[in-house]
Amino acid sequence: MIDIHSFALPGFVSQATFALTLALLAWSDSRTRGTRWLAAACGLQLLTTVSRAILPVPLRVSENLSACILVLVFFLMYMGLRWFVLRIRLSTMNGPLALSAAMTTILSVGVMHPGAELMAARGASLIVLAATIYMLLRPRIKSLTDPGRIVAVLVLFTMGTVAFRVVLGASRLGDNVRWNTFGHDLSMVAFTLLGFSFIGMYVAETKRRLHEETRLDSLTGLHNRRAFEEMVQREVQIAGRDNTPLTLLMMDLDHFKQLNDTWGHALGDRALRTFGGVLLTVTGSGDAVARLGGEEFAILLPGRSARSAVSLAERLRATVEGLRLSEGDELIRFTVSVGLSSLQPGELGFEPMLRRADRALYKVKRSGRNRVLLSEADTSAIPPARSLPELETAAGAARTRRVREFAS
Image: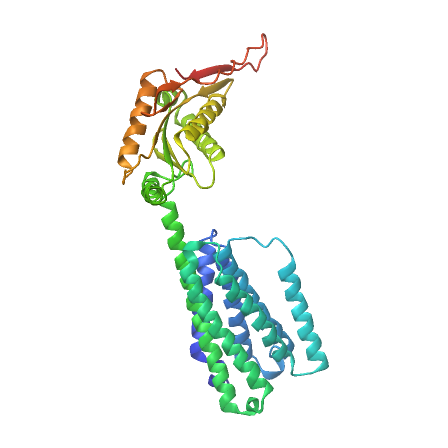
């Protein structure tokens, strides 16, 4: 016969629901790896509940094993939440070694003091829960700060529940059936709330990821126009408030339509991805890089003066000029034109700066392309670095390649 009181049917149903839900989420979404840890924690807790409730007394999980499972459940929970808020892989064996040491200590306590192993396990669990709270309050993923704080509160409640059962076991109240039942019910409530928090963390992560994906260009991985305009608006406000320079670069790949028509869109996509990689190479972590559409790109340089931005743009232009894309027996070369403009004193929006950079880019494209031009402050095109020599053809070689240029 199943003892309904020990089986705790409502708690079992909630644990089974959360374990199944998290398992399905982990199976359907392989990118959210933290869900696997959380699903394992819920599944292991569910397994413990079922085995204690339905197995005959001689076959129940021993107290030693139950104590070890308790610590393991909280460790799996820690690892899952760690992925969500820190997004750092386990690079050392400190965690697994500490878990092994805790389990060894628990088993040793059980041998020397039978019946005390569960108390030792709860003590180790308090340490894991404290580390979990500390981690949740210092997230690396800033968009998960608020969900992390909510989960930290629920983990704190769980920590209080475990501490209550430690005090209960160490005092005479541990012999009182009513207090033991209350402690057990409180634990069920804590695990149920944790299950809700795990689902909530997954929802918050999914929302964050969808938000990021709507702000990224799928081909190059750079910011898209929408995200770039938001960043420009924010940086214009900061530059106006702090009286710091802000420079915008507008760029077009030269004769890109001709490259597409001649070699196909596959090579055109390669050129765009390669150029996007160059942009990330020449810029810093505080700069904003975006693909605005087609072959049009932009860079926003907070804190950089116009002259400093020109040097960066010229380095970018020369780097692109030296690139070669392999296509069969030929090497394809392409170039880029750049127009620059800086935020002027008194400007409250980015539209004037954007128009000036666009006009500078238009002048470059009309005057021969493959150049850098600073709008208004410097109306003359900055001459390009000397072109790299074309690769010479090796006479009689079967794998001869010719350099094809899509430049001025």
